[in-house]
Every structure is written in C-alpha cells, then in structure tokens.
Length: 102
Image (tube, rainbow, N blue to C red; front, side, top):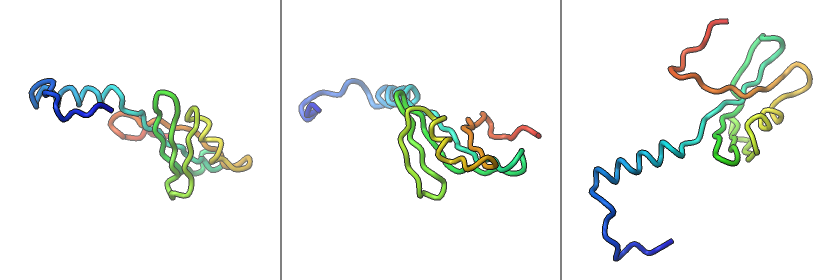
C-alpha cells in the first residue's frame, strides 16, 4: 500500500463519495440462504446464510456453529442435508421479500 500522506485528493468530497458508492455496488456479494426441507414440503427452515464473491462463497450457519468457504453455493447445501428426509437447497432472496404462495 502506498503511503497517501503527501498525495492530493483525487476529487471533491461528493464526487469521491459517489465513486465509493459505485465501487461498493459493483463489488457487492450476492446473498443466499441454505434452507433445510423436511419431508415432502412438510416444513423448512433457514439453516445458513452465505455470500457469493467472484471466486468463492462464504457460509455461516444460523446457529453460528458452522463456517465454511466453498467454490460455489450448491456445495454448501450438501453440508446441511441429512439422510433421505432432510434435504438442503440454495435459495436466492427475491426482491421485495414477499413469499410466493404454495
């Protein structure tokens, strides 16, 4: 990292704030959930949340006991399934947050 002590500002405060906002928007990770489904649509709950970056995903279980780095979100789902009656899947939040009816 270059020491910026003697360097002049690149631009004014408002323009710099706009540049930072654009940088954050362009590099923001996508959020997903790992949802456990019990039986055949009997019940479900969010088991973990994750963020997808350019080259990997970071996942944290809701109870905080599991943290992992995976190459893709679907690999995280494998960790949360159990037997043949508890499946896990990746679910991407929808804009607006309203659930679709069954």
